[in-house]
Length: 251
Image (cartoon, rainbow, N blue to C red; front, side, top):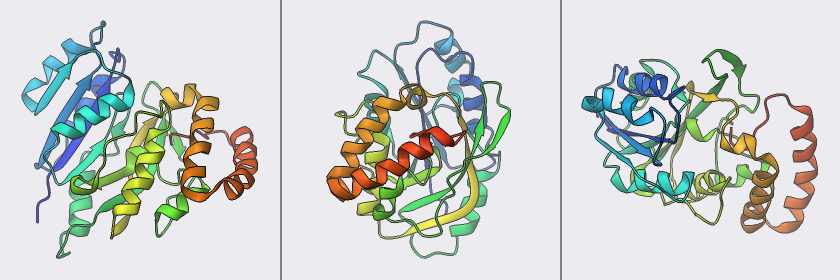
């Protein structure tokens, strides 16, 4: 079994850190990777950086879009692999052999799991580690557990392409939260890899728009879990928001 992993990078004016993201994908020891880069019409040197590595990129486009999740949908539509994995500009895969290590863990299974997930390391703009994400991935993950927040970072949430829906463009900052829930509702087998899968750049779009993101996430949770229980849980979420150093709704 050698599943193909489609890695999708969405970027816009990210010349400062895009190259390390690209290198973390192209430097993988595992060969069956389809790499897609969706750019939102960058005006800095982002396009030149992409062109330097064009031989290792299956598909790329640079055009004005309707935001982050519109760009992600473009990547999904182009993906042909068994799994889709979003590693956006500034984020990286954890190590050069992380995909091979994942495949080794699932190689004896008769059927590919629907979702693979794991831990996340937080990094600063220079790529230096700030430690592991405080919220630890649960031993067993279901859509109902997301009522406690985004227990798994989007960058460490790998989904079978056949069950991956498009992102809901109604949400500007938390559509990834909604997307993960919808993926989990459709999945039949989720595997905790017990590995650090990705490095997340602290200070991304959702981190910079925390209040708007929390408001969106509240409405998403009301939709899936009910308004009363969501309201009660959000008292705790706000406490966690103001007391946890590395909290971000997107990680």
